[in-house]
Length: 287
Image (cartoon, rainbow, N blue to C red; front, side, top):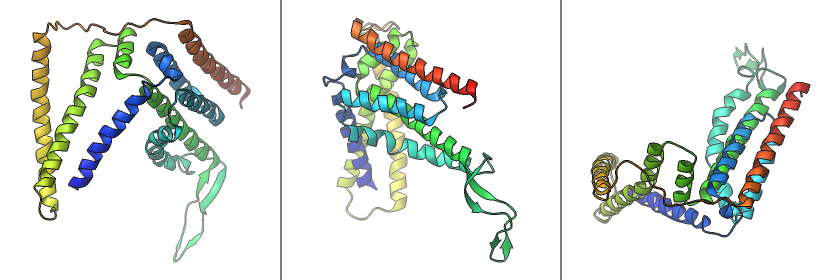
């Protein structure tokens, strides 16, 4: 248990450090102004939510993969981060919608027919997978995966400080930006403390761990981390005040828009508008 905990903490640091390296590469998205990149990605996420056809979602996903490849993001690493857990978890949520008692429609696969014999029992219902239910589940999973793909691509190709500065430039609440930045910065410190505690326990353990001892250690670790985080927040606040903090956040990064940034944003906006126009045409024609 402790070994797995240490490995999880180590993998957390390795993955974070590896992901940060993509933001320094000389790829397509790395050259785009973070403000334009943020607006464009958010616009595509809105389009993913609004479109109603699988092929249109796949078109946005295809553009996302092309942008990732042009930004020198290793596709194997990128796809594993995107599709390994979240869309599969979404599929589990969407499975009930495939059945006829949730979404009625043309049967795709009949699992149980009305009157079918089940040994001494007879089924009073028909249970089947419906075409609209399966289509809706596939669309839901693809929407989730594509939206997550866009968010992860934005995070991989943008320095965290630049992303926070772009949020501030777009008039996002200063308090929210500060909390987000502090959380990202100090979560590594707290994870490092937890990793040291796990390693210290392992180095002092001579026999097999009992489940009760492990639970007691986990509870003590959470208590220590909570207390350390409270103490750290007070110390950080005092250090900020001692250095002249007066409640205002001053930007260090200054952005300058280039014609390439406007062209990139125009491409993403135009793609989204085209897909929404196709969506409206399809709705009007009843397709």
